[in-house]
Image (cartoon, rainbow, N blue to C red; front, side, top):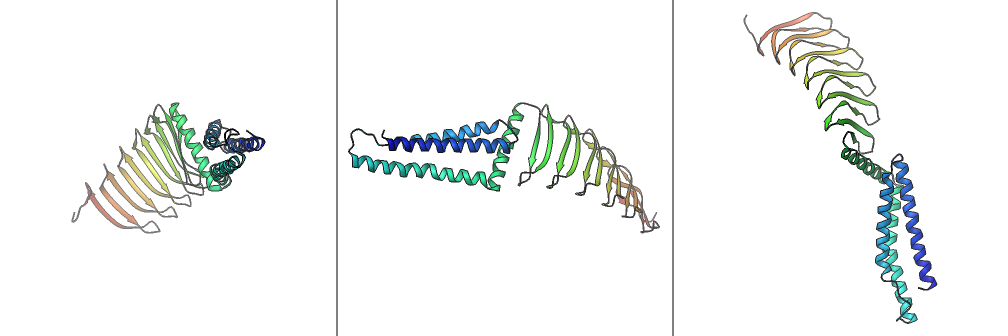
Length: 269
């Protein structure tokens, strides 16, 4: 191998080392210090080394060829080498420098971390929006949901919290407006709606009071306007209207009344 060939090969090795180091640094920084990027960088290095080995097989020998043929083979080798290495380097540079590429890499790293966590047993399952921001977090213990499942708006503010116990909803779940004020409160027992759930207007006033028993409406159901004045009240029994049904105007005066039995209005009684 003459001086020119040595210099060419050394140059390719330097490119390989630089790309590997750049990839490792970027991914390590982007993933928050996780060791996974080291494996990614090694994979990149192996890929480039294999590509170099392929073109290296065509490197002209100093033996059994005359000077003109060796120069021709050297030129051919350079063309193959740059055809292989340069496009890959350009693609990698674009991937690392573009915001879309960074999001793609970030999501790939996050997904890999989640898979590793799942294989280790207990973990927090995470879902993301297309821009990479967190969408939902679900704690898993023993293969079941356990603890507070949290969902988020795109801006990172909390959307809702749902309590789980051994894979079933248990306790009070809460949903929020984007501004942070409470929107809904739902009571659960053994996975079913049980107790009085409350829905709010954005101004904080109660909008609905909904009594549940074993996942069915059961009891006094009330609806309020934005001023907090009740505009509807009726009774439910095991999911069906049963008993009185009353409507009120904006001042709280009753304007209509009906009687229901097993979900059907009683007429003429």
